[in-house]
Length: 128
Image (cartoon, rainbow, N blue to C red):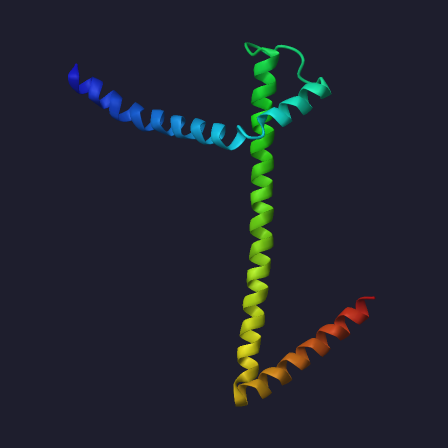
């Protein structure tokens, strides 16, 4: 009996800890914004009924948390994309400056760059 209990505990404990950490993170991330989003959802009167076992207040709160989490995810992805774009562009510019300072390499690089740019401009002008 003791072995079965310990085996069950070993299986359930990681699941319980994971759920507790996720609930903590969800509450931590949504708590500052819950009042504003709940007020907006309440004014819209979309969630003024009970749903299954949830009262309208609970439904507004949980829907607010889902909306906040989705918005936080979108903002995080956009911030990451913008940052990555600027970092990669600045790295390319830095590499370009370094290559332009190397004596023999800069001649070959500039020539190749000019040929590629002229070819690219011709193809673009043919499209329009």
